[in-house]
Length: 207
Image (tube, rainbow, N blue to C red; front, side, top):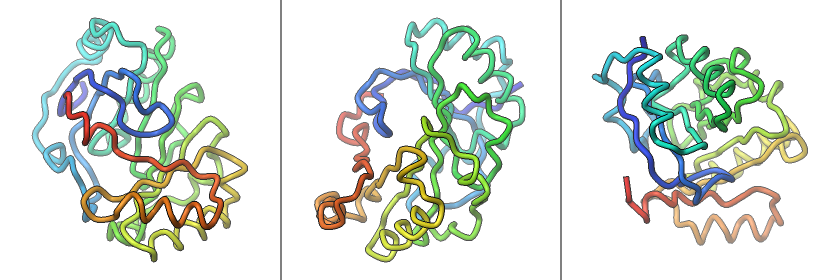
């Protein structure tokens, strides 16, 4: 059984898959309390659903791109076999995780979007940085930026783990806190290889 907050199809608003149709499976429960969290409703409650039900619900959407998200999906160990079944069925699976738990049990075929929490989130001390040692080239590491300190802190993490040469890196302005244009200016000044990651779904709002 899985505790699910919601299953829905919308526009993928983040990552290098931004703009594509995507079916989202949002799991309930989270072990972090980020200052800028926009899905606090997923921290509690949720529906107890069987793996079979969730799989059939996903298949009925007719969309090949799936995102497993939360909350924090890796808190529920039963998500691991579902991810495998989705991949075996031919789906392209994104797994967005908050960076506090090990990713080593996730099927190698999945695309991991690893959200490394910056100091502005108040959760940076909770990060499981060993994940950055096993990240793969096709995976994506996201930093949500609230201010210049977050930006410089993120650059140090990227340098320490040589991330620009090892995976895709995303800089996301914290919605309503960091102006995208200001973050873009810093990236231009640095000639940064990172991708500016605007939350497209906040503007489209077609959930």
